[in-house]
View: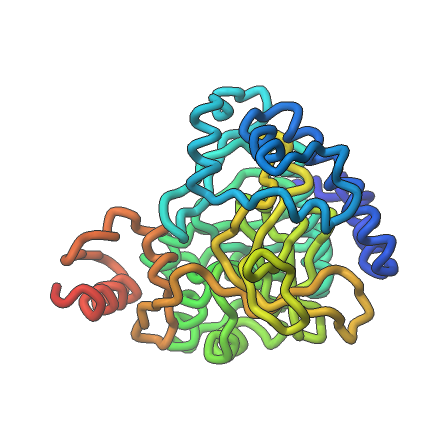
Amino acid sequence: MVNAATGFLDEVEELNRLQWANRELIEKRLFTRLKFTIEHAYEHFRFYRARFKSVGMKPSDIKTLEDFRRVPVITKKELSEALESEGTLRRLWGGTLTSTGGTTGTPLAFLISRDAGTAGLVSKIFFDSWIGVGACERKFSSWTKTSFKDRWFLNELEATSVSIIRNPEEVFKKLSRFGPQLIGGNVALRVLASFLVKNGLRLDGEVKGVAAWGIPLVAHHTKIMSEAFCDNIYDRYGSAELSGAVAQQCVEKRGLHVNSDLSLIEVIKDGEPCSNGERGKLVVTNLRNLATPFVRYEQEDTAVRLDDCACGRHLPLIADVEGKDPSFFEMEGGVEIPRATLDSLFPSVRNLPIVYFYRSSPSRDLIFALWKSFGSV
């Protein structure tokens, strides 16, 4: 496979320098990107102008992050209605149409700009390097849906979550032939790991590390993935609204460092920033997606804010990210699947009392999980 990731290496090197900079320099760079983002949103989107005017502000009034926190938070429902009323999604010249995965309810359709897509790829390469995996090394990821750009630019083999859950044996065969150095994925990666451990299977070749995202990385998930892949496991956080992976654990495993070149992440409670160790709502501002600005957008997740990390990086730090719906389905292999994640994988089953899946044993596990939740099959 041809790998074109080297075209992004200059931007990756910039991030590599930024991560060791002092906090003042990091915040100055973030604020410069933030000012450009909010000026663009104010000039080109009526609903953002209205939100600024509702509190008597213009972008020029924002001199500090404290000033910026006066801008009202926008919810997914409010943004969806605003994009529809303004006809934003019909401006295909401004970006590529995409959507959220729907794990917190109804998916949000929006446009993503080319710059934001590139920044997301750069962020992914940057965080992979923390795990000891280079840009040109082979990678595997499980996603809700696959992406050509990752296969081409990141030398990455991909599989959909549904394909892994329904036929993990076939995915294992493809993985063995490919021989990835990095294994990454959402809840389906836990399902695949459970299948390998249960059947005594091991991948050929050396797996250098694992990046896990989509649901909290709990101890028994780590144990299963350690047995299936390797012990070098890192928790990662991101979303479509954030243009991809925006935060990841370092070797200290204390919290997740935020790529502040990609997004500003606030942890707030009762409208105020949380103190060190306090849990609050995540409010995010995408600093790169100008096609659909996300300015003080309520992510529908919560997290704990942390101040410092022993690794020496001064990038913002969060920990213990939790989704909107904490309930789980428990599968036979001990893997817990969040109800919201199952909704996103199989949206047609959300309100059905009886659901049938055929083929592989994980599908039978899903039948059992659904039976326990809904009452009977």
